[in-house]
View 1 (cartoon, helix red, strand yellow):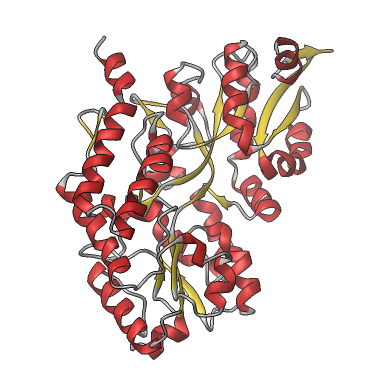
View 2 (cartoon, helix red, strand yellow; view 1 turned 180 degrees about the horizontal axis):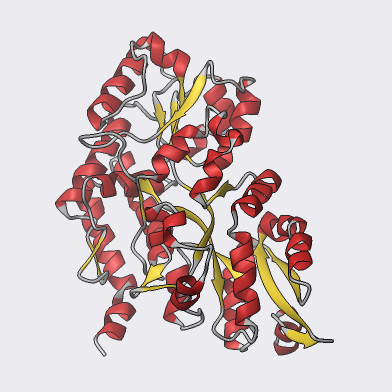
Length: 413
């Protein structure tokens, strides 16, 4: 194993007076970033960038293995919910000092909620590279038939519209909204909108049975009880086709779905469908998740100044736009959103509006384990009536408390 790790890892070096930095890019980003590197190397003739492409499915394990072998790259991209995990094992370099000296990279360049995802224990450990959040994709034509000229702005309107759509359709095979129990994001979003902290007591105990989250959970389960959303994820094998065939009229998802919806709806101008920020409990818009990928530098890097120059370059408006054209990943830098690509796209504006109302999830390494393995499980139980909402969330907290046992032990010393 060790020889493999050595070959795979981030071997940074100085050759013939040239500094070589190693960047690990995940998935498609690892391939596409190579298109912008020639411009960086042209401007910085003493620095070469070596890109290692890593599949997303293997990224976390490979990063941890490389850290254990003291063989991390100089820098890489990380999903912003991964940042706390690598801070905890002390793998990442704090960036505050670099940011304070930078002439171009500042916190004010970014949406505050997105920037906040990179702040852990009072320090900044990442710079937003590209961003995402969840909004609602909806069928304008169905809304109008149901008597709504505009998307719902509150929870009350969302429920009212959903009931009217189902009543109007009068078809047991058609629903108002798709809220699959194997997607945790809507449950967390509505909990956050209702003021839940999700994890309480310095993120050491679950708080899903607390009033704020439980009320939000009950609200979403009402859609299942009234058959406003399909029960069971097997009913929808292709969300784009189901949306096009009016199987449902609303779907909460992220920007990665825009190209496919355009293709399936055969409508790139937004006559039949659109996007809208999420409704709120009492106002509009409600908050959504601050998602995306961040650029981080490793503590073990021997080329930190060169690595920081690369981060600054990737954070420039023109570089962000060039990367967007290659990947469709939305730019993190706010100034890039002034460009016609975004202003003239009828489906992008909702994301811009929503990014001004996004919040991070609890910054703990266990977060993804909690929502993927536990929240989705208990949401399924509640949707099928195997448990009441209160029973499901009480059992959820019990499981979460077990997951967080090690965290409590660490914080006690």
